[in-house]
Structure formats: C-alpha cells, structure tokens
Image 1 (cartoon, helix red, strand yellow):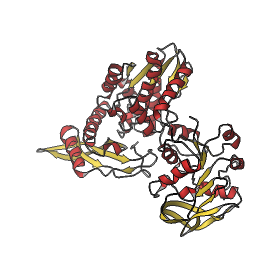
Image 2 (tube, one colour; image 1 turned 90 degrees about the vertical axis):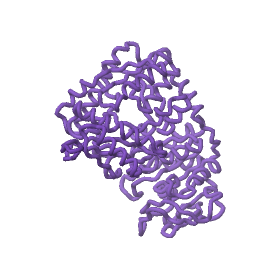
Image 3 (cartoon, helix red, strand yellow; image 1 turned 30 degrees about the vertical axis):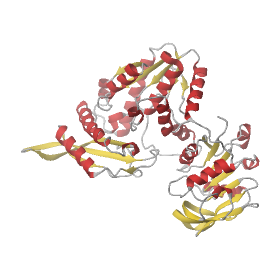
Image 4 (tube, one colour; image 1 turned 180 degrees about the vertical axis):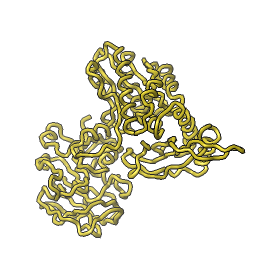
Amino acid sequence: MNQRIVILDYGSQYTQLIARRIREHQVFSEIIRFDTPASRLRENPPQGIILSGGPNSVFEEGAPGIDPELFTLGIPVLGICYGMQLMSKTLGGKVVPGESREYGKTPMRTVPENDLFTDLPEEFIVWMSHGDRVAEIPAGFKVSATSANCPYAAIRDESRRFYAIQFHPEVVHTQHGDRILANFLFKICGCKGDWKLSGWIDDAVAKMRAQIGGEEVVLGLSGGVDSSVVAVLLHKAIGRRLHCIFVDNGLLRYNEAAEVEEMFKEKLGLDLHVARAARRFCKALEGVSDPETKRKIIGREFINVFAEEARKFKNCRFLGQGTIYPDVIESSSALKGPSQTIKSHHNVGGLPPDLKFELVEPLRDLFKDEVRRVGRVLGMDPALLDRQPFPGPGLGVRILGEVTEEKVKLLQQADLRVQEEIRKLPEYKTIWQTFAVLLPVKSVGVMGDQRTYEYTCAIRSVNSIDAMTADWTRIPYDTLATMSSRIINEVRGINRVVYDISSKPPATIEWE
C-alpha cells in the first residue's frame, strides 16, 4: 500500500466523509492529527495532503495550527474551508471575519483553465459553511472561483500544487464534488486508483500470520458485522487456533444466540464457545432503572463473563477485536476537549490484570461499508453482513426503566415483528437502524369486549451515514400500520404502538 492521501483533521464533522469519498476512487486515505509534524510525512511521503474543515476560527486563541514546513515538502495540498483559511494565513495571506455568514447551498462561478475544476461547468452549486473568509490571497496564488459573498471561493498556486476551496466537495449538496476530488487525486496528485479490498485481505492475512506466529487467539464474538468479519479473517489466517467466545446475556434479539451458534459453529466450522449468562445479567439488573447505571452493570458483567471464559484458554497470547477506523479516529483525535458523557460503551477493554493480551485488530483501517465489502469477498452470508447495528448492552437500553425477564420477552417479540416487516421494504439496505423500544408506560385499551391495561411500544427507525447524525426514516404508512397491528394483536402485553420522529441531534438514536 504505497500510494495514499493523508487528511489533517481539524475537527470537521465531514472529515470521515472526505476519507470515504477518496476511497471510493480506489485510493487509500488516512486521517491523521492536525499537529503531525512535517518530518513524519517526509519519512513516508503521501501522494497528497488535505487540510479538513473545522469548527474553529483562525483568530481564536489556541486555534489548531499547522507545521509550516509541510508546505516545503513538494507534496500537493488541498485546503477545505478552515483548511483554506489556515493555508492562506500561514502562507502570508489575510483572513478576516465575514461580514455575513455564508451557510448552505451557494451558486459559485469558476475561472477557466484550472486543474481542480477541469471538465466542470462555469457555474454550479456548492455547500458553504463559514464565517471567516480570505480577504487577501498569498503571493503566487490566483483566483479559481467566486461566490456572491466570497470573492475567493477557491484559489490556487499551480507551480507549488497548492489548492484551497471555501466549500465542502465531500457532501452530496455540492454539485460535481466527486469530480473535484477526482481531479485532485488523479490530475494533480497523480494517483493510480489501484487500491482494492481483495488485495487488502491478502495483506491483512499475511500481517496477522506474521504477528501471531504459532500462538493462539481469543475473540469476543457478538454476532455483529465487525466481530463476525474479524472472526472469518482470523480463521482464514490461523484456523482452529482461533477461539471465539459468545456471551449470551439474555438481552439479545429473538433467537439470536441459536442463530449465531448455528452460523459460526455449524456452517463456518469455527471453534465457538457460548457462555449462557442470561440469569446472571438479569439478577445484576434487578431494581435498576438509571440508563447509565444499567450500561455500566451490563458492561461490567460482560467483562467478568468474558474473562472467566478466556481464562480457560491457557495458551492464548492474543485478543482479536473488531475495532474499525471510526473508532480509531474518535479515540486518537487531538481536537477533543472536555465533553459531557452522553452514554458509556463497553467492549473487552478493561480486562483483569492476569489477562494480558496483545491486540489483533485487522479492521482498524476500514470503514463500516468497507468491512461489509470484505465480508462479501470472503463469501460470508449477505443476511449477516447487512445486519443493522445493535447496541453492546442489547435490549437493556431499549427497555426503559427496570429490566425484567418478562419485559425482555415482550420486547423480543415486538422487535421480531418490526424486523420482519422492515426487511420487506425495497429500501431496507439503505436504512441505518430500525427497532422497537418498550416504554415504562401502561395505558387503557380495548381488545374484543375486554378492557386492557398494558405496555406501550415505540418504533424507532433512522437513516444515517456514520451514526454521528441521523434523521428519522419516512417508513410507508402501510408498513407502520402492519407493524402496529401485528404487535398489538400478536404480542400479549402491549396494546399501544407509537412512532418516534425525532432526529439526532437533539435526540440520540437509542432511547437510553
């Protein structure tokens, strides 16, 4: 993997999207910290550098900066939004606060004969999001495009292969944004576009074999996409020296434990060990209603059960994990400041001191859609690969209030009907997540001639790219009607169904 584009991360919500768009052109992209020194890039020069957008103003005290030496490496640079302002300021231009903030879709007019806008119309719509603007461009630069409120919507210094744009080409709202990125990748940076996941799989298997040698690996298998693909990859690399542990916490979807066992043990031939701990989790959650406390209890018990099972494998030096690229970016970002905990997550981190494993994380360079594509290349079942995300604490955070065995069974049955109906829609694969939530609310109803006083079930469905933001899904009324009818008529204990039409933010995807 020699050719790559590096993206200096200045905190934009679109940074990961830039990386994804580049990879769609079969060019490998890597997001790195904004304060990465030029000396490190000089050791292994990328084909090009992109400076991402960001929420800061270049005038703020402590605003993220850049190593000026980066502009002496002879590598093409593209600055986007904040990246444009930072580039201009660093190279001697002048940036000023905008008289009026430019946000949203904006007509932009290009200047002929510049490489970044090759084969594009003279005028098209772009997505602007900025307050500050460039007032004087650095020496050697030319104007590439203008908008009504921005005389320097795009600038360039072709002799040094420096380009800067005040809009976001990576978002769908910008017309021809994909072509702009392609021009930078191929026309300006000279990329070949030969990065393919089939080659990545061969490299990943070779790296795992080299890292593991003749040792054994233990893996926490959840049945989700990431851990499942890791399991198949590791099995391809080391065979029966991989030991998978599946913790059945009793908070899974209907019949899920049996389906995981059949898929991985019977069909794929993996060494799978199922820890049946439903009663243990239920007992630990007795009387607990606070969402954060529930998450911590479920996470703690998961670690304890996993550790007990892992101790049975005396010769395991390695721990396999389904860490993917967004996890790596989130945990390593230099832009994180003090933030409020929205909700905690659990994984197999925080194991007891006697379990000192070395990590094997083959997916840490891939996005979720790329993980699914790897699974397809490996010949995995599409039904497994197309599964929607499922929270680590399972139904424990979809039952509001205290979790009981009765409530778990109710929600499993309600969610089963939701899943069966949503899968019938042609657009199912484009929906990020659809699920049922059991509310701690009972209401009066009538079934036949009998008065009922039963629970309320909420249906939640969202569309998203990366779960950072989400919009509620416009499920057809007929489908919602069928879901409601089936739940009320087939699940004894629920007599009312509501649909959640809140987006993230301000709501979260999960209710707890």
